[in-house]
Image (cartoon, rainbow, N blue to C red):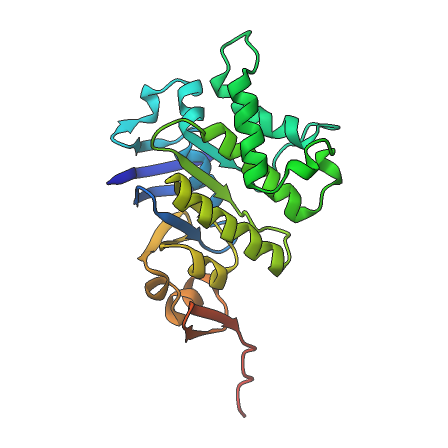
Length: 265
C-alpha cells in the first residue's frame, strides 16, 4: 500500500526556486530517507510534504489530499520533528510531550485522563519517566532528542495511517547517541506501524537504516533506490563534488571520504 504520493512538487521561497518538479512515492511502513548536498532542498521537501509551506503540485496521503484535511486532522496523522524544535523556556519534559496531544484536545478544552495516560506510556516507552519533572533544557542532546520523538509519538497515538517526518534527527549527536536514536525510531516504526520519512547528512548511517534513499540535488530528484543503488561513487562524487570511496559491508555501503591525489608532474 502506498502511503504518500508526491507529484510535480515545486516550491519557491523569497521568489527563488528551491524545489522543482519533485515526484516520489513512500510505501506504508517504509523508512525513506532523503539525502543530498547542502542547499539541495531536503528540509523544504519535508515541510512541503507536511503542508507547512506553500507549494505547487500535489501531495496525496493514503489516497487523499492534504487540502481535504483540517489543520487539526492533519496534525493527528502527520508529526514533524524539525532539526531545531522550538522549546518553551522552563517547560518540563512531561509537559513538552503533552503538547503532542494538542490536536486531540477540543478547542477551549483540556487534556483528558486518556491524554495523560498516553503521555505517561510514551515517556515510559522512551525511558523518559525519570526525567518527567526535569526542565527540557537541562537534558543532554540524546535525552532531548528522545523527548522530541516522544512528543511526536504522543501526537500520532490513536490515529490511523500515521507518518513521522524527521529532519536531521541525528544532527549534533555523537555516534553513540546517533545509533541510540535511530534504533529507537526503527523499533517504534515496526511496533507502531507508522511510516518514516527523514533527511540525513550521514550517508553511511542513512544507508544502514533506510529501506530506500532519495538523492536530491539542485531542487530535483536525481536518484531513488536501495542504499546500494544510490550510495555509489559516481553518483555521490558528481552531486556532492566530493572525493569518496564506497566500501560494501554486511551492513550496507560505507561512504569514506578520501583526499584527492596531487597531479603527477
